Amino acid sequence: MAHLTAALRVSLSAHPPAGALLDLADRLRRLSPSARDPERFHVEKSEIEGELRRLALPSARTKGIHP
Image (cartoon, rainbow, N blue to C red):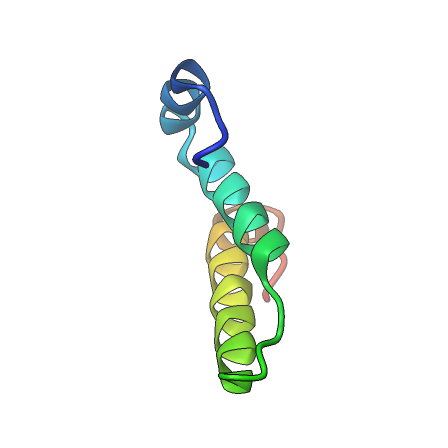
């Protein structure tokens, strides 16, 4: 979120899921395979997936969806 203005960062901190989604979007944008550490790509991808699922879980539960 380094590219966001301070006012927007404060606004997003009041809504953690939105801020977390923007953080994940930034991480996803930077995600790329590396010849030096090819496994790191898959580890980071799995971490992003886990965070997305964690953020979706409360909403899924209220809608009766079982991820």
